[in-house]
Amino acid sequence: MKKPVIEIYKARNKQFSWRLKAKNGKKIACAGETFHNKKDVNDSIKTVCHSLGGNWVSVKIVDLTLKK
Image (cartoon, rainbow, N blue to C red; front, side, top):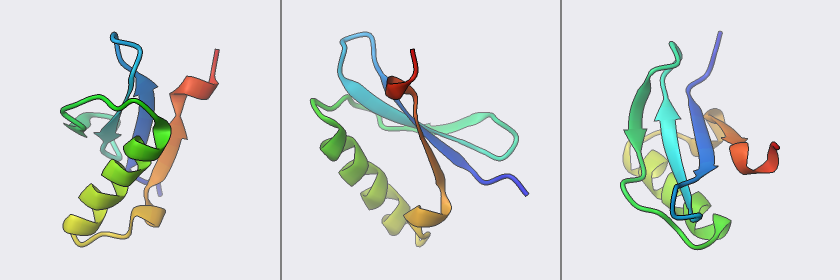
């Protein structure tokens, strides 16, 4: 069974952001802001997942900034 996916990506302003995609691939949430570094992105992801009562480790995280 597919997991929800959080994609970390570089926004147009060259800073980092994230978006949450449902199991069907549709975007259902986004950071709403950009971050200067990946640590801040990861902290944001953890905060959102924990506040929703979920375990952020169970969500697949894909870092699109590593792909060329």
